[in-house]
Image (cartoon, rainbow, N blue to C red):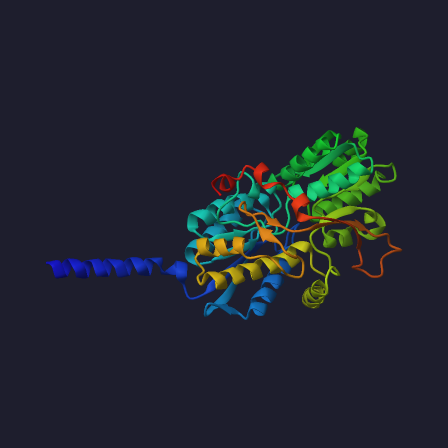
Length: 402
């Protein structure tokens, strides 16, 4: 009887191990969950996929003797679709890491899912600072930028230029609300006032009613708390109504190089943007830009450039940990310094926030530009310690435990 019990226990143990095997399967799998065809596709989507492919190739295509595999999906700008894809990837396809996610509502949901599944998510495209605030996760790293850092860089610069009254045109979901909330904080700290705000749906085509409300407010500054095509359409229509000529300073903290290109320098000239990356910031950045441009037909956005770095850091951590088990890899990612073509001596804090320098840039005049993608000039460097929210102010539960 004793032999039977031992044999039965051994059989049960082998079954349990077989059931646990997917967490340590025969590949390290990375998923790019992105906007492949919607309002954020130019800044993320296919370009993110290209960057991940570059990172996998540069790492040698394998880690710990396992091939590095890539899966991709378009979440169609729908929260339920994005969350459903992520759950299927984690549960059925053994995806170890998900990157991209240019939708803050989806990102906030996925940090919880990743923790439950003991997998990793790195929202390289989502912006809300809540990802390292009260909604921080032990299985998430907010890699590139956030609404706090972007808003602080822009508001502080414009406040010094006399911008003491503001109006917001805000996309109506978690991302836009976070941009407005963070920027409002900095406006008030600088002694300014918010005279009003209006919400618009994602991927809006007509901003005329919103622009007229901004115009009627008599605010000195108009901030577009949105991204992608919404920035392009909004800024163009503000120009059509002559807001800039009337003395209102236009800002879009989440504008990226493809957005400036889409607006055109005739209209965008003077627009301030905050970015952790520029094509010519280092010889390595120039080399990556040339490589990306050859593949995609245009330079990368800072999200696309940063996604490359995120995947490289993850793979280095897998190698250092000697396993792709999520908790062990997360520990290594927070331990290893970040040094790549866009980040020098960066680090991952306990709340998952990556600390790196940010740059205040200004869109050039058409006369200053030397080519179709020669779009901005450097105005100032904001050290990482000053650009991002202090660790003890975000309300991240991990910080209290750390």
